[in-house]
Image 1 (cartoon, one colour):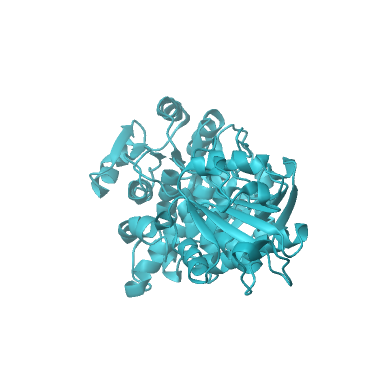
Image 2: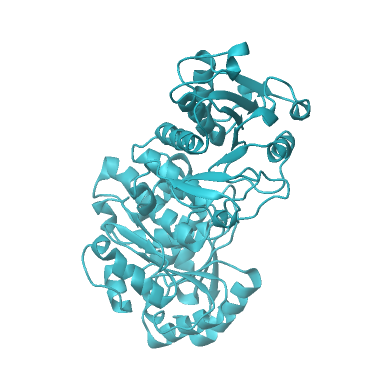
Length: 499
């Protein structure tokens, strides 16, 4: 099962792996054509009703596969056809000049140049006029390719009138990917949606499609398994913010000061509008000295204590902050107890890093946690203890399931899992072994948690952090510092997402 949003990410990842969207469209169109052949004999009348997006592009390809080289027109249209030929008319809802993607436009242009029967429908009233050129009552099969995944709510014109006419027609309706009006993320069906007889959905079933009164076929269109398994540009697209939002609250510092400063600055670079650091008074000034962009809130103590944790909890709850807990905290007994107390009481979102990870295995909490251990920290938490985490991804998934939280295990290949789904991020370089890169990662994930689901934020955060390191390694190899990653985060998240 895969949502429309996730499917878009997988498509983008496949393209990054070398399987282009154009190739996938060709495979999708072929699958639709096969479904039409299953329900209609050669010579049958097929009307394709297509939108201006890639869903329509799939149908343009299907029309090309269905309509053979021997063309008929006028009085010959009703004549018997031989071989695999079908009497196909393709209706485009709207003007061809407004087709939304290059590959859909290429396939529309191919129909035009090859003299296939096509027509632009620019007025919804045309579906009520019973024009002899595309009367749907005459169709044996109607291919619904008006709207694909990512669409929710009732259909609007001209799709609404088209859907009504399709539903009234005495024809077998084959829907491309999902019926128009079906929400492939939530599984909702609009009141005026197309009622399909058959659905050809791609790669994997969409949520709720199995509840439709239709025969559903899942077509393999050649997407590599790696497009789902390995984090890529599609995962960044899925988690990328469309503006500044969020005020991460970094609770860290005491024995160490650079770690919370790096995490807080990384959050700003990854779209946070403000970044707060709660730290002991004895080191607050030093942390502030790293950047004037940070808002440092000192508390009386040399380290985090249970008494101070109560005050910080109140602040975090009041503003519903995404919290980063752990960078530079230290491992004093009272500090670990304070971390435990905070996590047991907080109900929001927390990135747990570094020293605070030690309290997670025995924790009972309603908070949403993203834990970011390195290899040694993972082993201390009770996870597998190996050099290459990718080799034990299944074991880490089982560990996350037992833990009940998202785990982002940092290594040469990062393993990101929520206990049911697992992603691997291969971005990064050996030069990122320098201290502090885990702190920048924690800050990036915290910023993305304002916009994305925990697994998506963790996967994208790991990939962005690694891409930032790769950019530095192009010129500095093993000589760059974690603080230099900060400059590269925006390009990796926005400008570098398609690299």
